Length: 291
Image 1 (cartoon, one colour):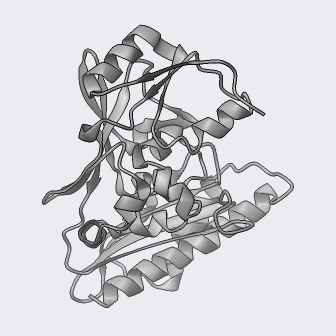
Image 2 (cartoon, one colour; image 1 turned 90 degrees about the horizontal axis):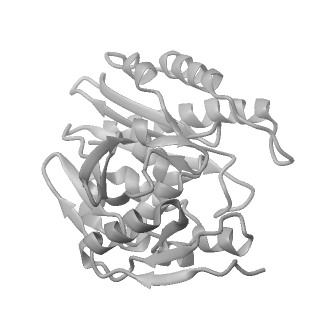
């Protein structure tokens, strides 16, 4: 199969990208890694009239570490991010999530921003962004705006990004607590396949081993990856015993509305979600206890 005919342009700056988007609107798509867009075009699930290549824009390729957050340019390759030890020390959940993304060839071409904008409800980086409440900087010809991950994802393959906007950078919050831990896992038919369910968690503890901060989320159980800040807040002050963890993860799984297919029924996905979320909370707790 091959794509429908399209016009190709290569942008050399963010300003040029914004000009193309302002002129082309919904008929224009940006391409960087192309790991999702190209297969969709080949199957004619999407038929853009124009592709604007943003691969040569150096301003979209960077990792910058600051005190309160890590900034990653939208076009930064996933393999570059995964190999950054300083970033992994500040925001370990990103590397943990990336270890489940496709295969090495996928990560060599795929970009961090591309995964987020594609917004697959079972994808790993969107889940990490939800759990950490990442901030996404969107740029247009008229200016820029920052959108939190909780508002960014609208549905399957749908975000709040307007037709004239591009994702410029992602800001990942840094947890400054001395005793913190994170964990990420998923279940799929084969490693690299789309996740049936994915789970992520991050925990901070005080000197006595009591939870001072918690975050966790699930992907593959609905139309968007979901974080559960209200349920996570119930863990604060506890020692993260099994009863406390099982209570919030049961409620989180109950809140999901997963679809069913030949690989997994809705009931199975809900049960799996509760199990994986509890497992990741315990793993994050245990990692924090080592600090």
